[in-house]
Image 1: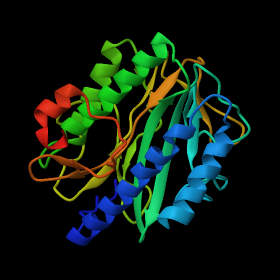
Image 2: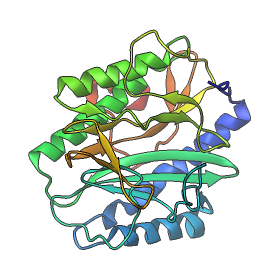
Image 3: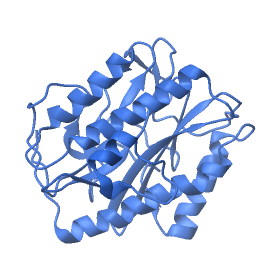
Image 4: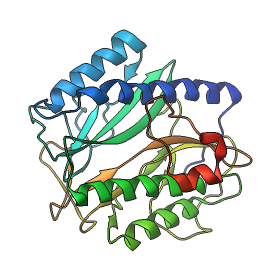
Length: 274
């Protein structure tokens, strides 16, 4: 484990700006997510919005961690049984599909990273429930964040909620520290035991982004080197926010006017979000 950076007041302000812009891309694209549109068209629209309207840089475009080929698009579009890193293309969305759109923008050197689920037309009861439980998982994880808590507290509450609903938690991908670097320490696992792993300190910033499968947790990697699907072809859902640890709790940095409201149980615990 490398050391986890503690952000300065200037860093935090930069991350607030970047986080807000990332969330606003999701607000912008929402009306275009409908049957008959391709994921490539969503990518084109987001890319133009980021570069022309926001003056941000799409972080995924040409992103190339060691052992990977450069990622070819500006956003990730993960449809149905795709867990994460789906590459936008010619796939036409149809009624009943569920889609995760994952946005990371760079503004003044800072990264804002967030993702949301979208329904195309009317989702199945299963897809709706999986999406809602995953949303609750993310917020339950976020609700555990405060100085003095442990990373294991976040993973534990997410795993408990998902497994109680009969779902499974993807292990191979997790949340991550973020700032001027896209992916940095710590790794934020979405499973675990309370009171374990690193202790949180005010000024840390990381993502909480549980990937929850309706079936088993095993994954398969597609030939493009990026797309990850459920091995059993079951549906998968994911939500993501970037969060700052504060002395008394947390501050969600990826907020925007169009973001879905937090679940009621979170609003009772953190009225400031209402």
